[in-house]
Length: 106
Image (tube, rainbow, N blue to C red; front, side, top):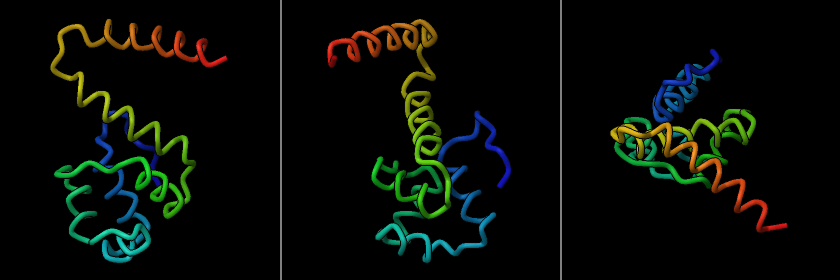
């Protein structure tokens, strides 16, 4: 598998993985316990996967679960913020909030 272009959307990454592994959509969908039409919609960006599906995909394709989550969640956040003028500032504040929340859990 080629290294992922970080600007590539998650749905394209999933399709690329499936095609590079020579797996038919129906077989991957069966592994995920999904209807093939649902997986097809995820691969076209018409439907969003959830973390359970993302974790299952990491297993199916033999990719580290943390890497798969990184790709998925960064895509999800980018989609939410792409139209915001101050997206970099928002991300900086998010980092601060995450640090704060992790400190509260100790």
